[in-house]
Image (cartoon, rainbow, N blue to C red; front, side):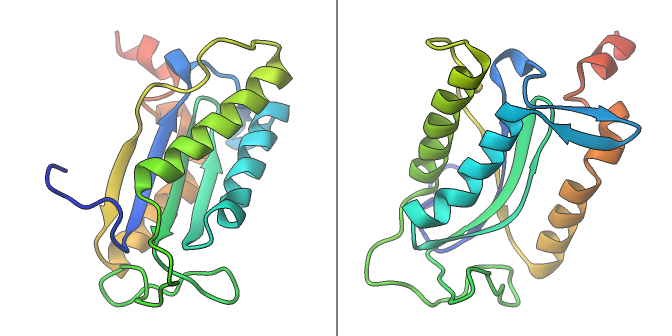
Length: 173
């Protein structure tokens, strides 16, 4: 969003596609998700972001065959590593003394670290792994957060109809 401060304490729902939407992270059979080594590495990279950026909190995350969905909160902290959303779905006001990183910094680190590792795993060093950009949505309320979490949880079961599924794209043509 133009004029939006992506470093303020907020929750964000992000989606990142693989380069050319290649199916390199997982397979889905009978609505069941099966991560491969690259997909597992992507999941581990996401889970380690809190160590790299102590002022963020991670929420729902899912690796799909050619994209990932995740929710993270900037500028929030909690002893148990969980985010307690306030009534507006924004990060709780508890902050550390350090300024939180911007969303682009966090996503950039995630993409860089996971791309290097996945290219190594897949034997494709030197080529793009992720699509150049990413999509984000500001979490505006607890109801919005609940809807997003449900969407992420249901994503594998809805893969056959997902617009990111290459087989669905071919059916629509």
